[in-house]
Amino acid sequence: MKMPADIQNRMAIYAVLVLAGLLGAASDAVLNQWARTGRGGWLLAGYALWLIVATLLAFILRSGYFGFGAAVVLFLMVNSVAALAVDRVLFHARLSAWGWVGITLAVAAMVCIELGRHHSPVGGD
Image (cartoon, rainbow, N blue to C red):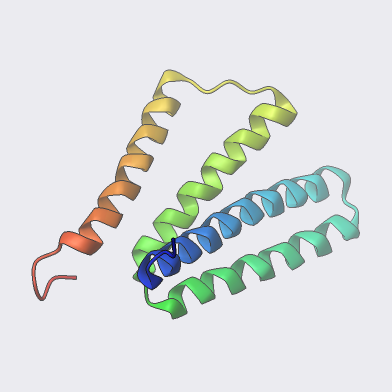
């Protein structure tokens, strides 16, 4: 069974958004490694990753699926969750109860943004 084109487009945009967030978190980790070691290779790798992230964000904005604010908020949410995962896996950090509340609110915000895109009144943004 073939998916409608609008659902395929939505899934592709979200896939690019998740990829951008994951690469953003990876580039943060690479830049952190540069800050610790002072080796220029880490800095160049961090720059290269952020260039890819910026290109992916430009692709998302060019698609017109999200406005600038929504795209940035969703990117930062994915980036933050990925950074938390890296922090947990590599540095064995623990998330506080307030941190979990923040993640829950961020996921709720993402759902509200998506629902608002499809249920806004005529003429609304």
